[in-house]
Length: 324
Image (cartoon, rainbow, N blue to C red; front, side):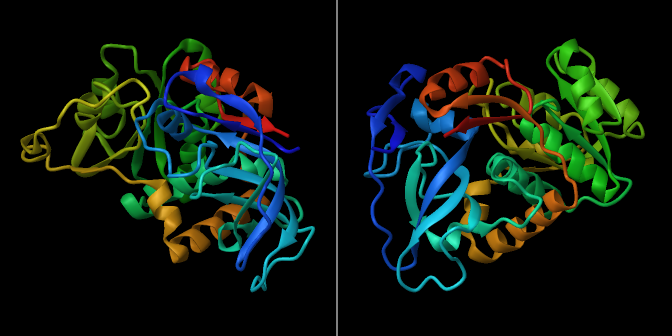
Protein backbone atom coordinates (compact mmCIF):
# COMPACT_ATOMS: atom_id res chain seq x y z
CA UNK A 1 0.00 0.00 0.00
CA UNK A 2 1.45 3.43 -0.92
CA UNK A 3 2.75 5.49 1.99
CA UNK A 4 1.76 9.10 2.71
CA UNK A 5 2.34 11.59 5.54
CA UNK A 6 -0.86 13.10 6.93
CA UNK A 7 -2.03 15.20 9.85
CA UNK A 8 -5.32 14.93 11.70
CA UNK A 9 -5.16 18.35 13.36
CA UNK A 10 -2.82 21.36 13.41
CA UNK A 11 0.17 21.21 15.73
CA UNK A 12 3.89 20.58 16.00
CA UNK A 13 5.96 18.08 13.99
CA UNK A 14 4.55 15.27 16.12
CA UNK A 15 1.18 15.50 14.29
CA UNK A 16 2.81 14.19 11.09
CA UNK A 17 1.88 10.52 10.81
CA UNK A 18 2.71 7.84 8.22
CA UNK A 19 -0.44 6.30 6.76
CA UNK A 20 -1.30 3.84 4.00
CA UNK A 21 -3.15 5.83 1.38
CA UNK A 22 -4.13 4.39 -2.00
CA UNK A 23 -4.22 6.91 -4.83
CA UNK A 24 -7.49 7.33 -6.70
CA UNK A 25 -7.78 6.31 -10.34
CA UNK A 26 -7.27 9.33 -12.61
CA UNK A 27 -10.44 10.87 -13.96
CA UNK A 28 -10.86 13.10 -16.97
CA UNK A 29 -8.00 15.58 -17.22
CA UNK A 30 -6.01 13.87 -14.43
CA UNK A 31 -2.81 11.86 -14.11
CA UNK A 32 -1.60 9.31 -11.59
CA UNK A 33 2.08 9.67 -10.77
CA UNK A 34 4.55 7.59 -8.82
CA UNK A 35 6.61 10.11 -6.94
CA UNK A 36 10.32 10.00 -6.26
CA UNK A 37 10.74 13.40 -4.61
CA UNK A 38 8.75 15.87 -2.53
CA UNK A 39 10.08 19.27 -1.63
CA UNK A 40 9.81 20.45 1.99
CA UNK A 41 9.10 24.16 2.40
CA UNK A 42 8.15 26.59 5.14
CA UNK A 43 4.66 26.85 3.66
CA UNK A 44 4.22 23.19 4.68
CA UNK A 45 5.03 24.19 8.25
CA UNK A 46 2.51 27.03 8.06
CA UNK A 47 -0.18 24.52 7.03
CA UNK A 48 0.86 21.94 9.62
CA UNK A 49 0.81 24.53 12.42
CA UNK A 50 -2.59 25.90 11.44
CA UNK A 51 -1.38 29.31 10.25
CA UNK A 52 -2.70 28.37 6.81
CA UNK A 53 -5.86 26.22 6.68
CA UNK A 54 -5.93 22.70 5.30
CA UNK A 55 -8.05 22.16 2.21
CA UNK A 56 -11.30 20.36 3.06
CA UNK A 57 -10.94 16.60 2.70
CA UNK A 58 -7.16 16.70 2.25
CA UNK A 59 -4.80 16.16 5.18
CA UNK A 60 -1.61 15.22 3.28
CA UNK A 61 0.97 18.01 3.20
CA UNK A 62 3.27 19.15 0.41
CA UNK A 63 3.05 21.59 -2.49
CA UNK A 64 5.79 20.39 -4.86
CA UNK A 65 7.17 17.12 -6.13
CA UNK A 66 8.31 15.06 -9.09
CA UNK A 67 7.87 11.56 -10.41
CA UNK A 68 6.75 9.40 -13.33
CA UNK A 69 3.31 9.21 -14.93
CA UNK A 70 1.72 5.82 -14.14
CA UNK A 71 -1.74 6.27 -15.66
CA UNK A 72 -3.83 8.90 -17.43
CA UNK A 73 -7.50 9.74 -17.42
CA UNK A 74 -9.48 10.79 -20.46
CA UNK A 75 -8.81 14.06 -22.29
CA UNK A 76 -5.10 14.30 -21.46
CA UNK A 77 -3.37 14.90 -24.75
CA UNK A 78 0.08 16.25 -23.90
CA UNK A 79 1.33 13.51 -21.54
CA UNK A 80 1.97 9.81 -21.84
CA UNK A 81 2.65 7.00 -19.38
CA UNK A 82 6.34 7.01 -18.47
CA UNK A 83 6.84 10.76 -18.77
CA UNK A 84 8.93 12.32 -16.03
CA UNK A 85 7.13 15.32 -14.54
CA UNK A 86 7.31 17.95 -11.79
CA UNK A 87 4.76 20.35 -10.33
CA UNK A 88 3.88 22.92 -7.71
CA UNK A 89 0.60 24.16 -6.27
CA UNK A 90 -2.86 23.07 -5.27
CA UNK A 91 -4.13 20.53 -4.53
CA UNK A 92 -1.61 19.82 -1.79
CA UNK A 93 -0.47 16.27 -1.13
CA UNK A 94 3.11 15.73 -2.34
CA UNK A 95 4.15 13.88 0.85
CA UNK A 96 3.00 10.64 -0.78
CA UNK A 97 4.45 7.82 -2.85
CA UNK A 98 1.50 7.89 -5.26
CA UNK A 99 -0.95 10.66 -6.05
CA UNK A 100 -3.52 11.74 -8.60
CA UNK A 101 -3.72 15.38 -9.65
CA UNK A 102 -4.76 17.56 -12.59
CA UNK A 103 -2.58 16.94 -15.63
CA UNK A 104 -2.48 20.70 -16.23
CA UNK A 105 -0.38 20.99 -13.09
CA UNK A 106 2.38 18.74 -14.48
CA UNK A 107 5.46 19.98 -16.33
CA UNK A 108 7.38 17.47 -18.45
CA UNK A 109 11.09 17.21 -17.67
CA UNK A 110 13.60 17.22 -20.51
CA UNK A 111 16.82 15.22 -20.61
CA UNK A 112 19.38 16.75 -18.32
CA UNK A 113 16.89 17.82 -15.62
CA UNK A 114 16.43 15.17 -12.95
CA UNK A 115 13.31 14.55 -10.89
CA UNK A 116 15.48 15.15 -7.84
CA UNK A 117 16.45 18.66 -8.94
CA UNK A 118 13.10 19.67 -10.44
CA UNK A 119 11.06 18.31 -7.54
CA UNK A 120 13.04 20.43 -5.09
CA UNK A 121 13.15 23.59 -7.20
CA UNK A 122 9.65 24.30 -8.49
CA UNK A 123 8.29 26.23 -5.50
CA UNK A 124 11.40 28.22 -4.70
CA UNK A 125 12.28 28.72 -8.35
CA UNK A 126 8.87 30.14 -9.25
CA UNK A 127 8.98 32.29 -6.11
CA UNK A 128 12.32 33.73 -7.19
CA UNK A 129 10.99 34.43 -10.69
CA UNK A 130 7.86 36.02 -9.25
CA UNK A 131 9.70 38.53 -7.06
CA UNK A 132 12.41 39.35 -9.62
CA UNK A 133 10.13 39.65 -12.65
CA UNK A 134 6.61 40.46 -11.43
CA UNK A 135 6.79 42.01 -7.95
CA UNK A 136 9.69 44.26 -8.98
CA UNK A 137 11.16 43.75 -12.48
CA UNK A 138 14.86 43.90 -11.61
CA UNK A 139 17.26 45.40 -14.15
CA UNK A 140 20.96 44.88 -14.65
CA UNK A 141 22.99 46.99 -12.24
CA UNK A 142 20.25 47.26 -9.61
CA UNK A 143 20.70 46.14 -6.01
CA UNK A 144 18.80 43.25 -4.42
CA UNK A 145 18.80 42.41 -0.71
CA UNK A 146 18.12 38.75 0.10
CA UNK A 147 17.56 37.56 3.65
CA UNK A 148 18.50 33.97 4.56
CA UNK A 149 20.95 33.97 1.65
CA UNK A 150 22.21 30.46 2.48
CA UNK A 151 18.71 28.96 2.37
CA UNK A 152 17.08 27.33 -0.63
CA UNK A 153 15.07 30.39 -1.67
CA UNK A 154 17.87 32.82 -0.88
CA UNK A 155 20.34 30.97 -3.06
CA UNK A 156 17.93 30.77 -5.99
CA UNK A 157 16.99 34.46 -5.76
CA UNK A 158 20.70 35.29 -5.71
CA UNK A 159 21.56 33.11 -8.69
CA UNK A 160 18.67 34.34 -10.82
CA UNK A 161 19.32 37.98 -9.87
CA UNK A 162 22.96 37.59 -10.92
CA UNK A 163 21.85 36.12 -14.27
CA UNK A 164 19.88 39.33 -14.81
CA UNK A 165 23.00 41.33 -14.01
CA UNK A 166 21.85 42.66 -10.63
CA UNK A 167 24.07 43.08 -7.59
CA UNK A 168 23.13 41.12 -4.48
CA UNK A 169 23.57 41.72 -0.77
CA UNK A 170 22.69 38.61 1.25
CA UNK A 171 22.15 38.33 4.98
CA UNK A 172 22.68 35.15 6.98
CA UNK A 173 22.25 34.16 10.61
CA UNK A 174 25.73 32.83 11.37
CA UNK A 175 29.35 32.98 10.22
CA UNK A 176 29.07 29.33 9.13
CA UNK A 177 26.62 30.35 6.38
CA UNK A 178 28.60 33.29 4.98
CA UNK A 179 30.57 31.15 2.55
CA UNK A 180 27.43 29.44 1.24
CA UNK A 181 25.83 32.78 0.35
CA UNK A 182 29.03 33.94 -1.35
CA UNK A 183 29.19 30.69 -3.33
CA UNK A 184 25.65 31.34 -4.57
CA UNK A 185 26.94 34.60 -6.05
CA UNK A 186 26.22 37.29 -3.46
CA UNK A 187 28.42 40.35 -3.87
CA UNK A 188 28.32 41.05 -0.13
CA UNK A 189 27.17 38.95 2.84
CA UNK A 190 26.15 40.46 6.18
CA UNK A 191 25.05 38.94 9.47
CA UNK A 192 21.45 39.97 10.16
CA UNK A 193 22.24 39.40 13.85
CA UNK A 194 24.58 42.38 13.63
CA UNK A 195 23.25 45.65 14.92
CA UNK A 196 24.45 47.68 11.92
CA UNK A 197 23.43 45.51 8.96
CA UNK A 198 20.85 48.07 7.76
CA UNK A 199 23.37 50.91 7.68
CA UNK A 200 25.95 48.65 6.02
CA UNK A 201 23.42 47.59 3.37
CA UNK A 202 22.63 51.21 2.54
CA UNK A 203 26.34 52.07 2.40
CA UNK A 204 27.15 49.22 0.00
CA UNK A 205 24.14 49.96 -2.21
CA UNK A 206 25.39 53.34 -3.44
CA UNK A 207 24.71 54.95 -0.07
CA UNK A 208 20.98 54.94 -0.88
CA UNK A 209 19.75 51.41 -0.21
CA UNK A 210 18.63 48.51 -2.38
CA UNK A 211 16.04 48.56 -5.15
CA UNK A 212 14.39 45.28 -4.02
CA UNK A 213 14.47 43.53 -0.65
CA UNK A 214 13.27 39.93 -0.32
CA UNK A 215 12.26 39.21 3.28
CA UNK A 216 11.15 35.72 4.23
CA UNK A 217 12.11 36.10 7.90
CA UNK A 218 9.19 38.22 9.08
CA UNK A 219 8.77 39.05 12.75
CA UNK A 220 10.48 42.30 13.65
CA UNK A 221 12.85 41.94 10.68
CA UNK A 222 10.40 43.52 8.24
CA UNK A 223 10.49 46.96 9.85
CA UNK A 224 14.30 46.89 9.65
CA UNK A 225 14.19 45.74 6.04
CA UNK A 226 12.07 48.75 5.09
CA UNK A 227 14.90 50.99 6.23
CA UNK A 228 17.37 49.27 3.87
CA UNK A 229 15.43 50.19 0.69
CA UNK A 230 15.96 53.32 -1.40
CA UNK A 231 13.10 55.64 -2.44
CA UNK A 232 10.75 54.06 -4.97
CA UNK A 233 12.16 50.62 -4.17
CA UNK A 234 10.15 47.57 -3.13
CA UNK A 235 10.03 45.09 -0.24
CA UNK A 236 8.64 41.62 -0.96
CA UNK A 237 7.47 40.03 2.29
CA UNK A 238 7.40 36.29 1.62
CA UNK A 239 7.01 34.69 5.03
CA UNK A 240 7.44 34.86 8.76
CA UNK A 241 9.72 32.06 9.89
CA UNK A 242 10.70 34.08 12.96
CA UNK A 243 7.10 34.78 13.98
CA UNK A 244 4.13 37.04 13.22
CA UNK A 245 4.83 40.42 11.62
CA UNK A 246 3.77 43.42 13.72
CA UNK A 247 1.39 45.83 11.96
CA UNK A 248 2.99 48.32 9.59
CA UNK A 249 1.59 51.85 9.45
CA UNK A 250 1.11 53.10 5.91
CA UNK A 251 2.95 56.26 6.95
CA UNK A 252 6.14 54.18 7.27
CA UNK A 253 6.10 53.71 3.49
CA UNK A 254 5.58 57.36 2.55
CA UNK A 255 7.92 60.35 2.44
CA UNK A 256 10.81 60.44 2.90
CA UNK A 257 10.95 56.68 2.15
CA UNK A 258 8.38 56.44 -0.67
CA UNK A 259 8.73 52.66 -1.02
CA UNK A 260 6.40 49.81 -1.91
CA UNK A 261 5.49 46.78 0.23
CA UNK A 262 4.17 43.61 -1.37
CA UNK A 263 3.03 40.26 0.05
CA UNK A 264 3.20 38.10 -3.10
CA UNK A 265 2.02 34.48 -3.06
CA UNK A 266 3.70 31.88 -5.24
CA UNK A 267 0.64 29.65 -4.84
CA UNK A 268 -1.61 32.37 -6.28
CA UNK A 269 1.00 32.89 -9.01
CA UNK A 270 0.98 29.15 -9.79
CA UNK A 271 -2.83 29.07 -9.83
CA UNK A 272 -2.86 31.41 -12.83
CA UNK A 273 -2.56 28.97 -15.77
CA UNK A 274 -0.74 31.41 -18.05
CA UNK A 275 1.74 32.58 -15.42
CA UNK A 276 2.32 29.02 -14.22
CA UNK A 277 3.09 27.63 -17.67
CA UNK A 278 5.26 30.62 -18.57
CA UNK A 279 7.18 30.55 -15.28
CA UNK A 280 7.61 26.77 -15.15
CA UNK A 281 8.83 26.64 -18.75
CA UNK A 282 11.40 29.36 -18.05
CA UNK A 283 12.51 27.66 -14.83
CA UNK A 284 13.00 24.24 -16.45
CA UNK A 285 14.94 25.90 -19.28
CA UNK A 286 17.18 27.63 -16.72
CA UNK A 287 17.82 24.30 -14.96
CA UNK A 288 18.61 22.67 -18.29
CA UNK A 289 21.04 25.51 -19.01
CA UNK A 290 22.88 24.95 -15.75
CA UNK A 291 21.04 26.86 -13.01
CA UNK A 292 22.25 25.32 -9.74
CA UNK A 293 19.87 24.50 -6.90
CA UNK A 294 21.80 22.48 -4.31
CA UNK A 295 20.01 20.08 -1.99
CA UNK A 296 21.07 20.72 1.58
CA UNK A 297 19.25 17.89 3.36
CA UNK A 298 17.26 14.83 2.40
CA UNK A 299 15.08 12.49 4.44
CA UNK A 300 13.06 9.40 3.72
CA UNK A 301 9.34 10.08 3.44
CA UNK A 302 8.68 8.41 6.80
CA UNK A 303 11.03 10.92 8.45
CA UNK A 304 9.06 14.01 7.40
CA UNK A 305 8.65 15.11 11.03
CA UNK A 306 12.42 15.24 11.47
CA UNK A 307 12.72 17.31 8.30
CA UNK A 308 10.24 19.82 9.76
CA UNK A 309 12.14 19.97 13.05
CA UNK A 310 15.47 20.66 11.33
CA UNK A 311 13.99 23.22 8.92
CA UNK A 312 12.28 25.16 11.72
CA UNK A 313 15.45 25.10 13.82
CA UNK A 314 17.53 26.59 11.01
CA UNK A 315 19.77 23.51 10.80
CA UNK A 316 19.37 23.18 7.03
CA UNK A 317 20.76 25.13 4.10
CA UNK A 318 19.63 25.03 0.48
CA UNK A 319 16.66 22.83 -0.48
CA UNK A 320 15.16 20.11 1.70
CA UNK A 321 13.61 17.01 0.18
CA UNK A 322 11.78 13.81 1.05
CA UNK A 323 12.69 10.74 -0.99
CA UNK A 324 10.47 7.78 -1.86
